[in-house]
Length: 273
Image 1 (spheres, rainbow, N blue to C red):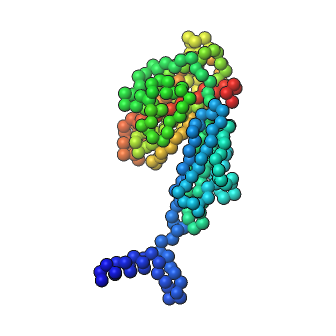
Image 2 (image 1 turned 45 degrees about the horizontal axis):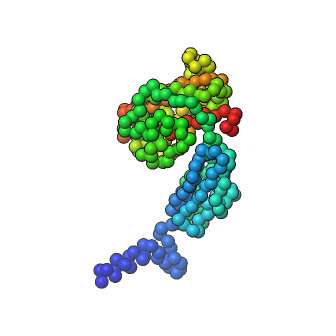
Image 3 (image 1 turned 90 degrees about the vertical axis):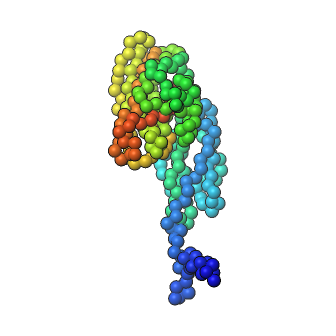
């Protein structure tokens, strides 16, 4: 009898009828949010082309996307099959299903393959805990995944100073610096970037960058990229990347230095755009 009472209570909690015989649902689907679509791409650094596959473990849900970085709506392009990508840009995806809250946006960015360099020198040692694949991790034309244990990430807790030597003198238009944010693992965005360039390969001239540096006030987990405009002719470039020296007060690790995780540095000229 006790077991039957529990079953009856469960059924009533899930759906009961009012005095008019209409079913009343106590768990409203409108309050349930769809999971974000799973996005897969073989490579995001474009040498020739790549492909995107989007999926969701709910057949009735529909996935919409944009190819300009904007948030998708149900008037955006509907995902029906694999997307071929040949140009740099950001694709965003969102799932919809009647009576459910739409999913959060899932984004994936593609980059033009940067020019090859002659050498990269590290003036500060890498962390023994997260050395990636050594200094060439930053220039091997490969991106890391959302897993910070992926060996395509270099993790540091002190400023990383590097000098990059190009094969020939180049007019460098910009640099893309890929980084990971996972605040629950004490991994924060880039704090600051100091850049100097050399036209003769010996003497360096520092110049200011005006790209906004991200500040966080809550837990975040994402792959991101810092795009820095250069527009200088040079033989060498010196780059100093600084981590967050003191984790902010809202975080459990407040006061400690934060980890900074970087993967690919992409050097852009007119030739690779």
